[in-house]
Image (cartoon, one colour):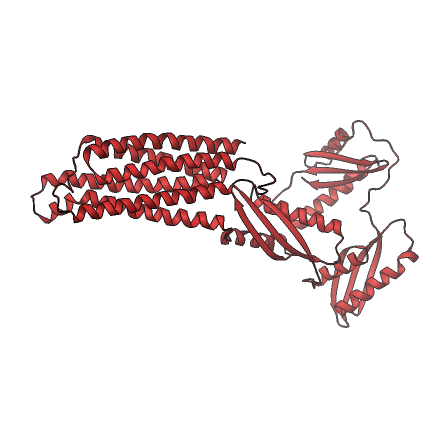
Length: 464
């Protein structure tokens, strides 16, 4: 809502200033007979139409998505930019025809320009207005990601150069009266106004090319190479375990819609795959604020990049957790050792076959001479505690952390489910510590805090 208000204010400001400049330039252009100023007046009139169109586009683009327009109404900004391009093209053609007619005319008055102080004043005012207006529009377009305002900003930035060209033209016309007639310099100065109008036309044609190409590309959903590279690099750096197989993106107004196909191990549970897709969507949206991302997970028979990943994948297939992996190249061959996490209430007999199957598959896939496992209870489930929770539990935790000379907790979270409880004590991270030092610190604090407090919950000290 705030972004729409900013765009509306910028569009209204552009409309008002375009009206003022159009009237001033037409009056002065007609009085002086300057083709350069008249071409600028027509340019400003089209600026006014474009500004009105931008205002209309901004209002329509702000409408929410509906059944007929599931991607919203943002494309109207691109349509308006294309319409603005066609108007500018018509202006350039008229100015070029008029300039050629005056240069080829036998009428001695065809090149006559009545220069006055008002001619210089209106062009200087136009320069000041366009400098401030283009800066304001560019800033607002960047803040709101508006295609229509960005087109207006580029348009009015070029107006600065065209006004400068006209200023040179009328200055040349004024100086021609001080130069000896029939001299080469007099010939050039008397035609300076017409030449400046041709410069304005060239600038307008350049604007048409830039704005028209951009509008058509957006309407045709052409691939944005920079956006494609950004997302591809992001996935390669942050989610290397889930390769990007296909990517499509389209911009509708200030919203980017991204569709991606990502590879995943076939053995993943559907709930886990869904969580991974959510994490990828959040990652992309952090990098591209306002983007709407849809991730399709494609099962693949992929070979893990490392022996460690392969062992974890095999354990996942057999519904076991695994940690503390160690691989040793002995004289006899590869040795593998790992901790396997099994349900704490299960019997060894009930899990004997899966454990043996895990060992056999690891040995076969890695060509290991031996695979050793250490069985541990899976402690990922919340443990049960019988003691009641003290009313001042959080205060007790904070006081104990202070006695341990530990960092003051930024938050203390206690989660319960009947008699199952877990407590997370969050402390600020220290970027100067290495990963090993951080792990050692958190492990030590967890152990010391657990020993010092009543046994009412499983405690973890973590970074916030």
